[in-house]
Image 1: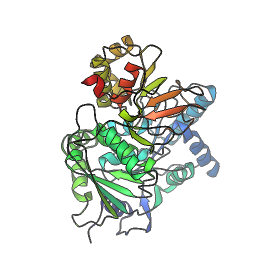
Image 2: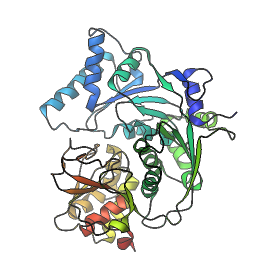
Image 3: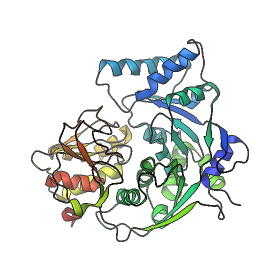
Length: 426
């Protein structure tokens, strides 16, 4: 019987054969903590070890500062200082401070993620790294601390779903719309504790940014991880960052032709329309044209789901087609995922044009994924965002949020009401 990707990845990390449903101890390739939760991990580790403990391998521990970057309060500043001092004490050099951007993206850009890696993090959307074939998962502080002792953690080997995607996106439609359609089709528990492998011509021809988007909301369907083995330009990009070992990993960890899947689904994007997750749940999905005209107070483009250069470029093209001007009274915010992405936007001339159009262009952070950042919504306001969750009050008590693609979000900013981007792009 053939093996799925997740079975091969866990087999590699466990050093032995594994089977679905089995609980297995795995070697950890990278254990990460962010500024939110990271200080608690440090304090717990030092309490357990009476401040005398050493992490198992400083080269396999990383910290990222992305939720509140730079700090907006004295409390946050003190927590970040705790992390910096602990890293210095432990000899941990992979500290990506407030000037770097969203943790998962920064780890990718710095060559710290390879296909088949087992990665822990204090972020529930760590699994977007499955876009390059890594088994990354969000865990609690205690799991992070435990991994710092021995470099291991245990997992239950999940079953796997297979999704095949065919066709080409029409103008104004993109991978985010497919993802939203999948969330609406499967529902909040449609991938419950499953690994999901993505295949088909649409996936094979997709960019890194698109793969990140596709895997970023597996969590919102209760999935464990979405997995795509790198190929083409994505493989070349990853080799350039993480080394030639990537190529061998792809060969040895790809699923076998006779791998067994608990469920197989097919989607075709030829006739897909712009989609949106309506308040107050990611799986409350409708076509954008069904809610067109609804009032929106604020638009945010960014996050781990849609903060890459390609995402911002898509939004820029809509703004350009709309005459480089947002609607009166509209608060429009664009947040690049990382410093590298921000530099790309600067070199392309986007930032000046955004600012002239009345768009707020911020430093790279997780930004408005939560109300813990500048731009939180007041009670009663309605936002549209490219983030991955829209539970009531997520970005402000009493507020409501639509989730959509960068193109739909910018079209809404231009018109001041929910707008199908095709109405502007033509």
